[in-house]
Every structure is written in C-alpha cells, then in structure tokens.
Length: 184
Picture 1 (cartoon, one colour):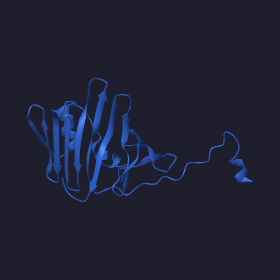
Picture 2 (cartoon, one colour; picture 1 turned 180 degrees about the vertical axis):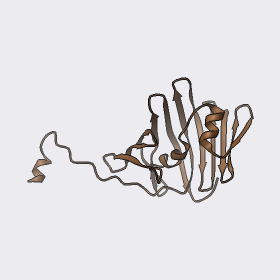
Picture 3 (cartoon, one colour; picture 1 turned 60 degrees about the vertical axis):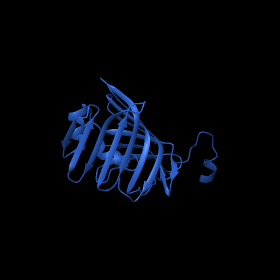
C-alpha cells in the first residue's frame, strides 16, 4: 500500500539520510572567493593550504596581485597585508577582524569547505537528493553546498555560499582540489 503512495502526483519521498564524508586531513585548493558586507566587498582568487598543524591562505585580486597572506600554526597566526605590513595574533579570526575589518568564520571554514560541520559545535543540516550536505546552520551562519566532485578518494563540494544575518556573505568556488596527507 505504501508503494502505491509513491506513485501519486505531488508525493515526494523523503531525501536519503545525510552522509558526512570523512574529510581529508590536509588539502590544497585553488579557487575564487567573494566577500560582501554592507559596507565593502572583495572578489578575487585564493590559494589555501591546510594541514592539521599549519595553514596558509593567500588572497589575490582578479589580476593575481596579492591582497593578504595568512599563515598560522600552533604558535599563532600572522597576516601580511597588501602594503607589506605584518600583523600577529594568537587567533586568526581576531587577527583578520583587527587587520582587515571583516569578521570571517575561520574556525568553521576549514570544516565547511570540505562539506562537514565543525566538530563539537551544535548544528542543523539538510541533505541534498543524494544524501550529501546541502545546507548547514552553524555558529550563526547558513552555508549552502553544491557542485560536489571527486578529488582523489574524497567527494568534496565545489561551491559554498555562507551567509551571516543580512550583512555578510562569503562565496567560494573551488577550481581545483588536491587532498593529501602532507603539510603546506
């Protein structure tokens, strides 16, 4: 009898259960990013090298000129701005806020970019038709995921759009993924 209900017009079966893939421990990605606030915006390229103990993030203008370079490890983080000034702090989010005037969700972004929720923090998630993460609500952000593709043995999102309230939006499109065990 239930099988007959699936054939009725307008009836949609529930989506498959959400599957969180095991994320790569380390990765390198090349992509494009845009950040829009109510007062300013930035669009350009990015290179991100992520490992368990070290991070390197380079933001570039659309013409390839460096805008900011963020490096971090267990001892802290440093940011070199487009004018060559070096800023240091213990926390990446605080450093970016103080140096660039924008609050970015860097604690969650390393997890979100690989299609996962940040561990140990409450979240709500919605799957897409294939059971992959489509929408995540975490840390006051709504993150939408799409364009999943294979990268090595991983299935990773190729695009994410993160919104915080009505005043901040981050769009990230991944042009190439290199998951791997190495450090940056």
